[in-house]
Amino acid sequence: MDKLPNCPKCNSEYTYEDGSLLVCPECAYEWTAGAEVAGEAQEVIKDANGNVLNDGDTVTIIKDLKVKGASSALKQGTKVKNIRLLYGVSDGHDIDCKIDGFGAMKLKSSVVKKI
Image (tube, rainbow, N blue to C red; front, side, top):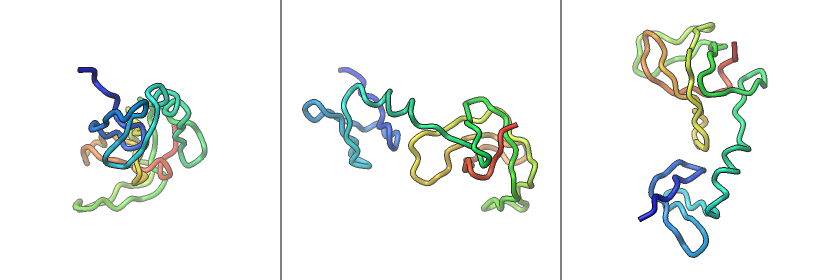
């Protein structure tokens, strides 16, 4: 059995074929078999200043961020190294990273700037 690609919109692994289309049961997104590569290549994630972000970039946080469940906030100017971009997320948290002293978390690209 061939491995079907994950949904390009929500990254769900439960896609299935319906004739010539691929369908995601979680978000109801439909696409053709070759379209997922072209769609992902067109999506661009930019920082607060409009600079294009890439996997592995180093960014800084531009404002203090309260962290749910933590005793302190992430301070403005905190450096975040080796980010990973998340395409097609609906909640806006499109950066996956690990911050020293806080651990793994997701950030919005609107609160960071590229170094």
